[in-house]
Length: 257
Image (tube, rainbow, N blue to C red; front, side, top):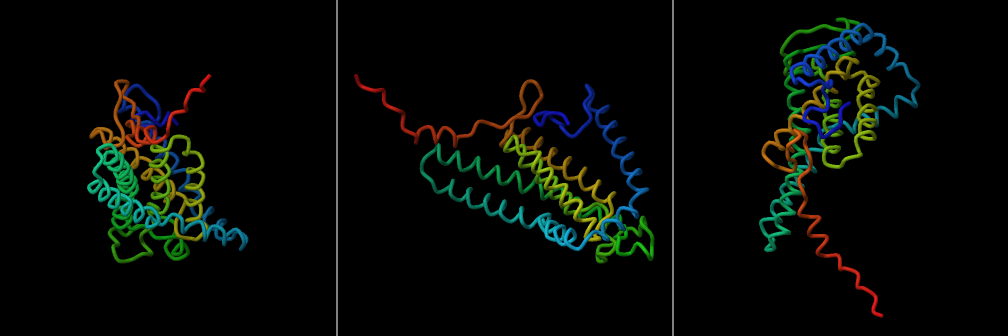
């Protein structure tokens, strides 16, 4: 993967954006069809894992619920915006606004891919693995807005966990690897609990990663939280909070003598 500061770190590196996009889509489709051949095999193996392992993944899968992320992010955004409006000091006001915008970024970077995932799974209408024995591993019936059993592709929990991993990594460099590991565990848990096929999880990974990157780039274009440099990379804007902390920390006095 290219460095996170590039405009599209989830694309295959190339001098041309179109070439990068086509190559990335080609790789995704290849992986999708390869995994498609093993969908049934992997699901049957995963649901037959020992009870102890299945219990672990049943607990882990709950971490992919978007409510754990969206509610705190929204509350943080609203609370910090309110505090910024009430505080009289300009530097503190700016710092609070920046922090609020950071929470807003996480909310949108996770929420928008999540909404897209929900819309797609309802429109596509793929049968979940619990219907494997009756309809097969790739049965589609189109729009299924009221039938949960036909809302398998893509995996919403996986979309959320990978979008969150990238969103936080953009804000806190160096956190991507552990967050991706956690997201991968959540994605695999969706197979173990018999909620999704491997191809559903793969689609969720792609949607979550691309969605978070797209939201970050939109923020960078507006100059919110991020900015686009002259080298066409994306970096965090300087934080007023750092300047505020420097002012609060007293300088060491030189020894008299």
